[in-house]
Image (cartoon, rainbow, N blue to C red; front, top):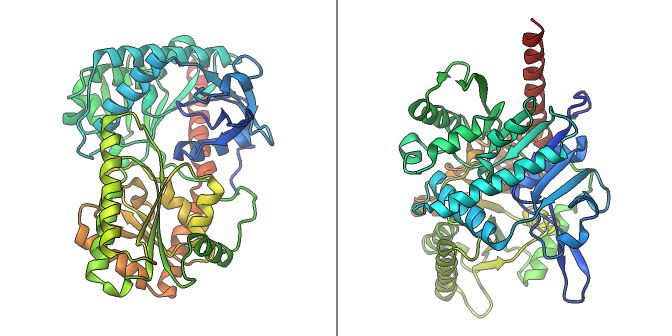
Length: 488
């Protein structure tokens, strides 16, 4: 049982672009609250639910302003308030430049090896700078004193740590980079690379998903800035301050206290809902509609498996939950077109009047629906072309308390470093992935149980609360050392 009770005082402030709850107007004039399905939210929210504090995020819901009760914020979760959500309002130009432009057309492809060219516009970077400054002011506004613990989340806020440091000199600032960090030669293509590194080095500590990401950052800093790099201690001395670089693999909450539905109930109800025979073998995918997730390559592997292993025709169905994402950006419009065309072609090739091999469900799915899907599946297929972590893999492991089912996991997802008992695949190898999918569907129950038992131990002992606890514990130690040094 992980607990944060032993970590007293400093106020906890989380900064992210995505808010954990949005409020939107419904057709009947009512307002509905939606809990985000984001992996970032699933990783970070357990900290605030347990410790309390403030979460600062972009208020993007159509009814967010109407539900803000005091000082642009409100207490959440709605049914059992545990922390304060402070919303920052952005206009269309700011969202277009800071979020859609620099964050998602420049930084996202820059950091992911997914063969989409980053687009660098100076106007986008200007918006990114000004929005980071807005959020840094909000952090200072919410701070009870000048020494809170501030967790800055992800690539939307590379500049914010330096800006927060200028306002809160004694703050413990931990910037966590949820996505991969690029190699020096790749970062060099960004015209504002120096500003990104300088901004992040305003932190007390920078956290990464993997040791490779941490080492890439160290190499970028050594190559780009005038500083001292200690590769043994993994620290950077820059501007008279020591910044620690640490590896904190993000995770999911192991147990939220709720009682899950029985696996057999989930299996039966999902197959009935989809109109499938009770003995249908079910493969699932749960992703955002994003070019880094390898959805198209996944479907090509399903096609090749049906071609090479005809015994699965009519008895295997693949269900893909695809959360709509960044739908106005050209790269995403083209991805969606290709994915739909691939599904149509495969279903026409192998389908019949009573059989459809791939079901693409492109909409937001609440967390309970995702959990039921995972508990009903025979195989969970995670096919990231490049991913910081991919918490879907850990969610599937958590959900399978029956120790049945197989995790098919891309070796290019950060989760592969921890979940070594998954069936590891190369998402670019369609033939190899098809063979792996067939093996997974034929894996004997004893092998499934042994693999899941070991992976469940990994996730249970390194869950989201343990992840946050490590960051806060390390921060407390840095504070103690700083206080001792000042006293001496």
